[in-house]
Length: 102
Image 1 (spheres, rainbow, N blue to C red):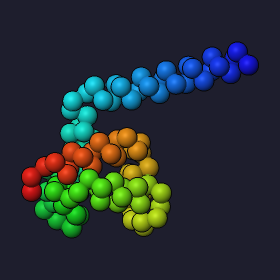
Image 2 (spheres, rainbow, N blue to C red):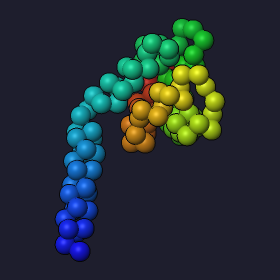
Image 3 (cartoon, helix red, strand yellow):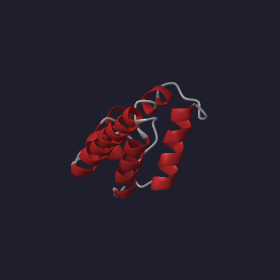
Image 4 (spheres, rainbow, N blue to C red):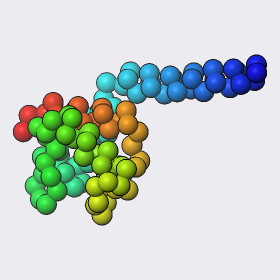
């Protein structure tokens, strides 16, 4: 019983540390968004066939990313890319794009 309590406590501490580390980096959302630039353009303003992300609602962007992540929304590249992000990262970057001016 004591080992289980220690293990759960350790897991909680690691998880809390990761979340607070992400929350403490004021540039994390921007840094994640930068990884989208190859297809979606600088700051999410597309110059080609990919959708412009800037100015879309946070709720809509999260919904779309979760669709790719779970495989509900078929795509060639986004399905694989979305799986690499945590839900917290998706929420963070969606908020960043939603806050940008088109």
